[in-house]
Length: 84
Image 1 (cartoon, rainbow, N blue to C red):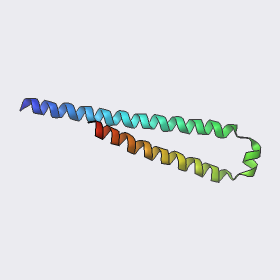
Image 2: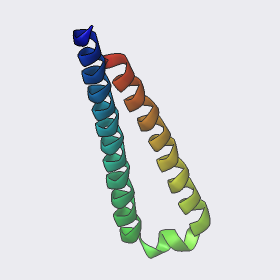
Image 3: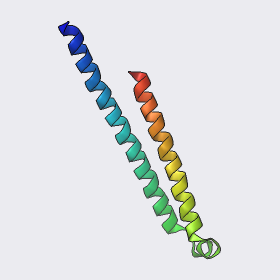
Image 4: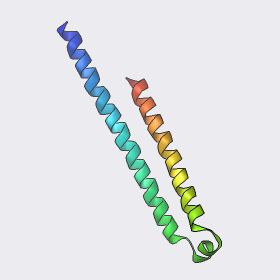
């Protein structure tokens, strides 16, 4: 009986740590992507800015990053759950 309780506690703790690490990894990846996009957007030529609506570009960038964030969160949580 005690062994079962210890196994449940260990499984719960390792599961929580795995989920926490997955979330931290996804957040780091998204932060790196956002930073790289910002740096790239700062280097875009002025002629591109003159021809393109900035709001449209920013909306597209945010939409793509949000889609990637949703994908990473669902993938990492699925992998964390299936590995246990």
